[in-house]
Image 1 (cartoon, rainbow, N blue to C red):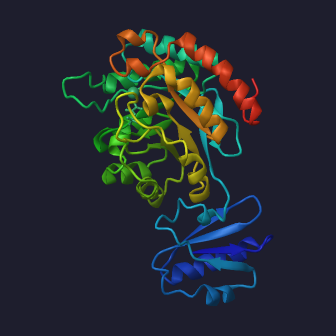
Image 2 (image 1 turned 90 degrees about the horizontal axis):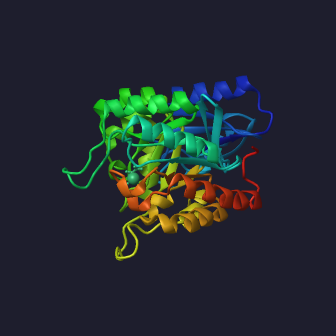
Image 3 (image 1 turned 60 degrees about the vertical axis):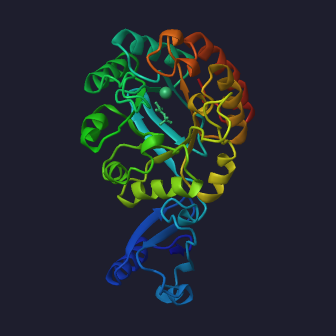
Length: 347
Ligand code: PEP
Ligand code: MN
């Protein structure tokens, strides 16, 4: 349930309502929008009558029920306003959100060695990326494939940050590694395979770093939003949703089926910012540019693109990785698209 306050409602009036709601056993959350303050009420609100709640204060404009199973992530919970995720990096604060310029995240699938990660970081930064991605802990289908360098991979990411100032996005697979990962990561990634790892979701929800939540490969939109709800319910509201393709029946030509229709759908359902990953979404580098452009046209807030200095020799996901030169070219093309939709960052 949400209590929408009238414009100009005094702070002490809002505090008093929050206090009263706490007294009634609910958890009130104050959400300050650009025009209005909304109080989100979490708890057993089913028995409450929204009309009767209206009388709590003359400053209450209306009281509405959030009908969706996901509450804190729902668009209604913020009375229709988008939220944004502000990420401090050495190069300044990067904001990912619906009202902000597009953010591009780029880098290899896995961190392989210092030279390749630093070189990739330099190249993607020069091309206009704001974040370096790269896995130190890799979720691989085969236990015999490269599993990532783990902790020493995190050190290499830290070195790449020092060299370039780029923000770092890297995956955590295990609750036991979260502290170490969060020390280096500016955004902690939950991969598709862990989207419903509820203990892990709760743990990233209870720490301060922003979270990139990738869509599970067989997850419905509701499953995905409920997974995000786990994170918000622990207190961390800085969540970005990343579409990375889902499993459909045809795997002959595409690794996954990238679901770009989620962009307008998510806009109606949630206030959270959106990222699209056309690399995992298609599995082939030659298809990445067209899907990246389509994602911009459809209104994504950010993109994640795999880039490797030598894709033919990559230890993971080579076929879907662009070379730095291809990424350079793609960024030029994306800037045309980005300007057309009024969302390309000033250089
Ligand atoms: C990744 O981004 O490195 C990754 C493993 O992606 P996903 O979880 O989407 O498969
Ligand atoms: Mn990958």
